[in-house]
View 1: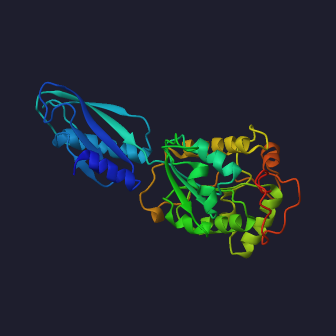
View 2 (view 1 turned 180 degrees about the horizontal axis):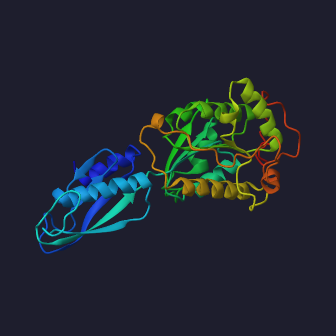
Length: 329
């Protein structure tokens, strides 16, 4: 398989890889400069010359994958009978410098609820190299007249992310289609939908963080209901609420979106060195970030204010008022 085809297939499978390039050749070597090879945790595609040269490059590439190395490296080898390595002698008489370039798995984020905050958040996240999934139970929220054509025109016309728009009358059904490690952000127009998505996210193997927009009082009701649905404390500790960073204050949808986007990008950056496995069921859920002891410790005041309704909320089993000018509390 051609190295470029192999790399595209690995990216589609969400498998990390290292591209090995013969960047510089002095004297004689098995391949000319520019030869490429792709190394994944379990496969090798292409060749940079075989023998000691290639075995050493593969060994270093696999070590980079295991360590989660993010920066490219240069590896220089002398092909001489006087230069002995773990893989023997290769006496072509030249010297080669290889560049080993890690290709990370593209992070994935799913936003459930494309109301005012959700749309503003989608606008921000779409400008990053992500797999971005936008889910709503209301078809009109995902209409081209509202969100445009991602990457081509409209509100998301300048998207860099690979955007997938999903109309799901039962939003939690979309969780099964998310890639392993996906970060889930829940901010629908309806507390019943919020609860269902959070509950199912905690039951879906291999997902990343789970964030829920809302206040401490909302989370207290959700905790009680989720316990009744069979979730234990370890599962509940995976949910972060309120979401966002406390340094960004304000209740306007665009301000809340900036706060939430900043936090999710922090999570992505924190987890970048971790090698992700291709198979979701082999990927353990990442440790909960911000395991704030929510029963005793109040959330940061600024985030709390931004996501709190000013009117009492109805019980979680009832339909929430759909005023999206203020986020559900």
